[in-house]
Every structure is written in structure tokens, then in C-alpha cells.
Image (cartoon, rainbow, N blue to C red; front, side):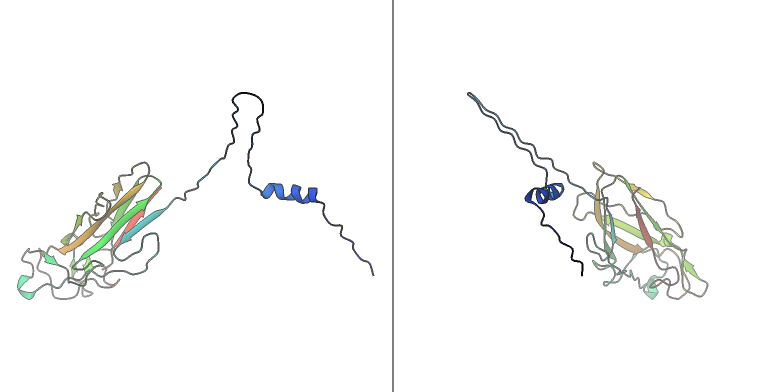
Length: 207
């Protein structure tokens, strides 16, 4: 039977193998009379990834959250189409009463924020309500820079460029939705949970 004999590695070889994996360091040795000065340098490097975070409604900072809030309006029979704005129900939005938490953070320059729908709100029976009847009001939240709310339209919206400071965008707001109630429309439930064009999609883009 052939036996392979493996010789132990010398200390010098082991040190040579270890050198590439050790952190580089510097030293300075001085000697002599009078003032002596010794310098040693250390280099630092910090790598920051490019990030973009968007929250509208329920969410956790820098995390994915699949929850979609429902903004629900119930118009009183005596108020249909009278032009008086209708607030959302108490359970609407993550804050309540039609209010949601809205936040954008990015660290790569100017972020653009847009909103889109698939068309007018439908009751499934051929009748519709224009998204122009929904108003979004933005109020300051935590950052001191209030995040503007793009206007919801029936279809593609118009993007809003968000101001970046030193390539950092950090804006938030509490958005409150209301139904303007300017038009008398046929009875029915318009929109819903991802049905009858009831879903609004917000999109943040960082080039």
C-alpha cells in the first residue's frame, strides 16, 4: 500500500500564508538625540449602498410590507352631489379617518414621485366617478420637509421631483383623502379592494 507522507509546514511558510489575510498596518521607529517624531497611518473605508424607500399607508422603515390600506367613503343620502366634501370613515388609512403615513427616503439624488390608476372608479354596472373627485391634503409629519402628494388622475399622473439635499431625499407627510362630492352619480359601490379601478399606485423613481 502506498502511503503519502505530508511534511509539516514550517513557521515561515505559515506566516507567509497568513500575511494576505491580515490587515495591513504601519509602524515607525525613531532613535537619536533631541525631539523624535514617529508617525503611523491607518486607512478607513465606508461603503454605503444606494437605497430608495417609499411608504404610503401601513409600513415599516426600510422593510417590505404587503398591507394595502382601504380608504372608504360613505355618502349620506341627503348629501349626494351637494358639493360638500365627504371625509373617509374612521377605519380608513393607517392613521385613521382617511389619513395615511407617506414617506420617501433615497440617497442617490433627486427622487421623482408619481401616481397612476387604471381609469375612473367604476361601479361594475357601466357608471363611473372621476379620480378628480378625490383630493389629497398633505400635512407635516416628522422630517420638517413635507412630502407633496401627487394629484390622482384617471390614468397616468404627472411626476413630482423631490428636492434632494447633498443627494439625500428625506421627506414625509400625513396625507388625508377626501371625496369632493360635486356630482350626482347613480347608486352603487365604486372601486373597492383592487376591483373596479379602485387601486391607486404610487411610484418613486431614483435614477
